[in-house]
Image 1: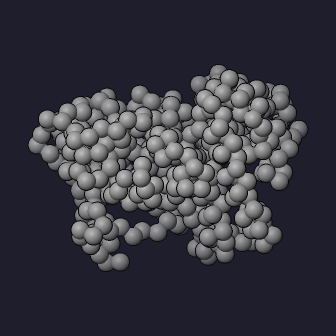
Image 2: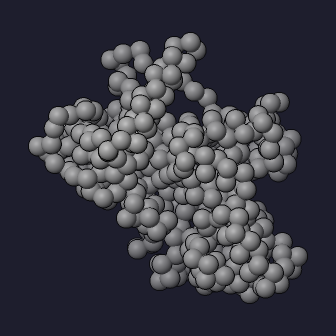
Image 3: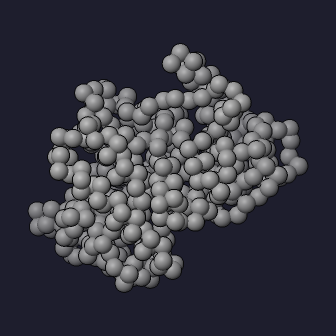
Length: 420
Ligand SMILES: [Zn+2]
C-alpha cells in the first residue's frame, strides 16, 4: 500500500511537472515505438511519434532525442469507451448506489472511477445517465483532476409510455439537457431482454431524436427487439445493447448509417462477480442473478449475428458501472475470446471507429499528426493475445503522461488501485 502511494505521488508529480510545462512554449516529446497500431487498422514498425503541447505533430522514424522509449511494447491510440456510467459506485456499506449517490463519498468514488479508467488506457469515455457527470467532466477538462475526457448525456429520457410526455414536452426535455451541458442525449426506448416492449411511441421517439439533431446533439438509444427498428427509423444516432433485433433490423441500420453498441459480457459478468454488492439494491432481487447468467450466451449470440451483417458499424461500449470501472478492456477480451471478433477490428472499434461515432475523428482515435496526443502502450501483442489489453504500461492523454511503468518482470513498479 505504502509503495503504491509513493508510486502514485511520483506519477502525479511527473504529470504535474508536464502540466506546468504546458504553460511555457509547448515541449517537444519524442516517443519511440517498435510496433504501433494507428487505430485505423494499420501496423507500423520502428517509428517515432513527435508530440508538441497537447497534440501529435509528426510520425517520423528519424525524430530524436527519444524521451519515452516504448520499444518492445505495442503502442496505440488511447481507447474510447462509448458507454460508461462514470459516477456509479458502491457506497460506504459496500452496496451498489447506482446513479443515486450524491454524498461526499460518492464524489470521491466518481473521481476514483475516472482515475482508474484513465490508468486502464481509456482516454475518452461517453457517460450516459447522470447529471453528476458534469462537475467531474469539467474538473477533468480544466486539469483539476486526472481522468478521461468525458462526454455526458446529463439526465436520460426514460421511456414511460404516454407518461413520458407529448412530443412537444419531449422536445423541451431534450433542449433542457442541452442547456444543462449535455454532449449527447440518452434515451431508454425499451426495458430489457425480458421486458423488451417499446417504452416510447414512434412519435415520441421521433420527437426526441429529431429535436436532438436540430440541437446538434447525437442520440444513444437503449433498445431491444422492436425498439431497435423504431430507433433506426426515427433517425437516432446509435443503438445500445440491441439484442433480439432481427437481421432485417440490422440491415436497416446499415442503410440508415445507425451505429450499434452491443455488449459481449463484462457488464453481465460484473453483476455476477459483485453479486453481494448488487443484491437487494433496486433492480437486483435474488432471482435476477440466474437470469443475468442466462443472458450472457444470448448477448454472445447477438454479437455474432451482428458481426455477420456487412457494413454494420459496431462500436465499443462496455457499459462500465460500479465494479467494472478500470476493467473496461475486459469487454475487448470478451468480444475476441467469446464472440470470435477479429482482434484488430475489436481494437479499431475502440479507436477510430469510436471516434467517428462521436463525430470526433479529427481529434481522437488515431495516431496521426494534428490529433490529440492520446497514446497508450501495452506489454504484449493484443493481435495474438488479446489479454495484453490488461497490461497497460503507458498512458498519455493530451500530451500529459499519467502512467509509465516498466513491463512486468523488469521492476516491482506496479499499480494496484481498486475502483469504487
Ligand atoms: Zn448503461
